[in-house]
Structure formats: C-alpha cells, structure tokens
Amino acid sequence: MIRVLVVDDQFLIRAGLVGLLRAAPGIEVVGEAGDGAEAVRQAAATRPDVILMDIRMPGTTGIEATRRILAEAPDPAPRILILTTFDLDEYVYQALRAGAAGFLPKDSGPMGVPPARTKLRAWGRLLAAVAAVGGGDGLFAPSVTRRLVEAFASRTGRPGDAPPPEIGALTARETEVLRLTACGMSNLEIADQLFISEATVKTHLNRTMSKLDLDSRAQAVVVAYETGLVTPGGARS
Image 1 (cartoon, rainbow, N blue to C red):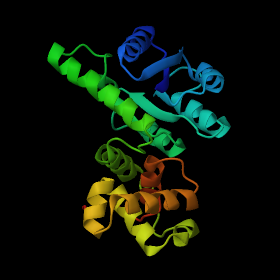
Image 2 (image 1 turned 120 degrees about the vertical axis):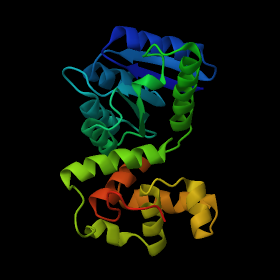
Image 3 (image 1 turned 135 degrees about the vertical axis):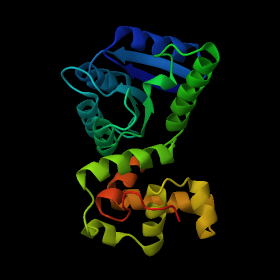
C-alpha cells in the first residue's frame, strides 16, 4: 500500500487527484493540503510514502515545502513528485535540485479535460508515476528530466568548467554511470552500454548518491550538469 499526500492550492484539482487515487488499488490517500506550509505539517503528521506537490502556490511554494519536508523527515523520507503546468520551467529545476524524485505535467492526470480516451491514458500515467516513485525509482522519466536540465542550463550557463572536489571522490566507473544517467539513459540502457548487470548499475549509482550526499536520481542529473560532467546538448553515448 502506497501512502500518498496530495498538495495543490486549487480545490478542484486537488479533489480530482484525491478522488482518482482513492479509487486506485494499492494506494491510500493519507491527507491533502492547500498550501506549502500545510504540506509540511501534514507530511510530519501522516508520514506519507509519496507526496504529489504543486509547485506554484501562494506563501510557501512547492520548492520550499520540498526542502523543508526532506530536511525534517525521518528515514525513510517521502518521495516527492512535483506537479506543474510547465514541463520546462526553472521552478521545476529548482525542485529537482531540492531533492524531488521527479515531476509530472498537470495534463498527465485528471486536471485537464481532454477526450475520454486520452484522459484515461493520462490517469494511467499519473498512477504509474505514483507507483514508480513509491517503489523507490529515482526518476520515472530520465529523458524528460534531461530535457528540462538542458533547457535551463542553456539559458543560465550554470554548469562550471571543471568538476568540484566532490566529483573527484567517485571511481571512474561511478563517474561514467553518473554521466550516462545525466544523458537520459535508463539503468538497463547503461548496463547494456557498459556490459554490466542492471543491479551493478544501481549499486554504482547508489554509491555515487551517497558520496555526493544526494537524495534522488534527479539530483544526480542536476549535479552532473552543474559540474560540467555533461554539457547541454551533449549526445548520448
């Protein structure tokens, strides 16, 4: 059973999400919040496995709420899935950097009013995303996060010319796994590329995240871009 907290300042959107999730097998909605401050309180009180977090809210934003929840949460910390209307947005980048597990455009769920068949597919994607992050996947769509980071990095010139000292603590194999992860490759694709098992890829990535004090795969992607390990527009190997 995946315990979910739903956070959105728009009542109709929040109600739609709650209704959908409550009807889905294997999911329990443990609370809902209309702003970031209430989300922090609800997260501490209910200890959900997954939080669906709206990013743009008055007062305490989804970014700040994400930082506070992850900083204050006991282990295991909840997995935070950011909801946004804009899939290429500086705020989403900041949320991933703060430790969110991934993001989902708001048109992927019951928030919009697409044709019935499209709507069913969109609801399925939302439930699949909740199940993925609830099951411990660091990011359910690596290529989408790569596109997001590249777009923001291209506008700001954020990545540096040389890796910081922390990157130097990684082994050559860990560095290569991090680079391929940031290029948008899945664990299975990385395993095929490096002729190792998928379990070994996960081990290398987990050690990398531990050494760099990161909470999610998405943060690892951001670090790879910010340190210059991967550059915007770089081709997949």
